[in-house]
Length: 318
Image (tube, rainbow, N blue to C red):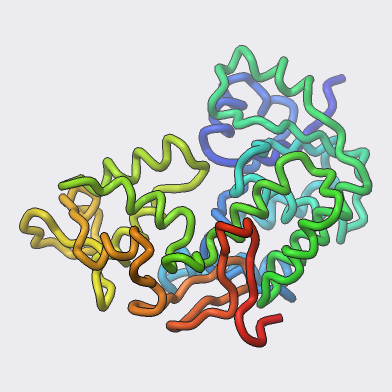
C-alpha cells in the first residue's frame, strides 16, 4: 500500500504540479505560504500566535487568520506515515520555511526518520518528472533538525548576533549558509545605506524604466517575491529625499497596483546614493523588519560591509 504522505510545499505552483501528478491521491498537499524574509518574525510565539502577527502584516492589520487553516492542517501530521518537504535549496524564502517547519516538528518530538526533503522548486518541473524527483529526495537527520531549530531561534532574535555566530559553525543543511548571508546582506550597507536587493533594484532604473520591468528583471535572477520589490520602489519614491521620481505624470495612488506600470527615473539623490556619495539611511531613515530585528530610524546598530564581506556592529550593538 502507498504510504500516506503529508506534502508541505513552497507555494501554489508546486502544489498545482503535485496535484497534476496525482500526489493528492495518497496524502495531502499543504502550501506553506509566507515570505518570511520581510515583516516581523519575533521570537517567543507559538505557530498560531506568529501566524496572527504575520497575517496582520500581510493584510495591513485588517485580518489575523490568513494562516489559521495552514496551521490547523500541519497539526494533523500524526495522521500520515511520512512528511515530504518541498523547499528549494538555493532560496532564502524556502530555507526560512524549511527551518521554521523543522523547528516546529522538533518541538513536537517528531523523529527525523519521518521526513524527506525534496530540495527542488516543484513548480518548475513538468508533472511527469515529479515522481522521479520525489524519489531522489534526501533524508533529514536529527543533527539537521537541531541546526534548523538553532537557526530559526537566531533568525527571530532582536539582534543578528546569533546568525553571525551560526555562520562560523558547520551548517549541514545544504543552502542554509547562502540564505543566512543573503539575509545579513539585507542590512543597510556601510557604503550607501542600501540593502543588497535595494541596490540591485535601483540599478535597473536606467533613463526611464517601468516599475514592473525593473521588478521583473530582478525576479528573473533572485528568489524573492514581487511584493517586496514594488514596496522598495514605492519607498524610494515617497522618501523625504526621494531616490526615484515619476518620469511621466502619475495620478493614481502610489499604494495601488497602477504604480506597477508607472515610469520611473533616478533623482540626483538616487544617483549620489548609488555612487556611494550619500547614505540612504542617514538622509531618509529606515523602518524594516528582518526576522526579529526591527531596523528603524536614521542610525541602525548594524551595517553590512561589502569590503569585509560581513555584518559589522556600530557603537554598542550586541
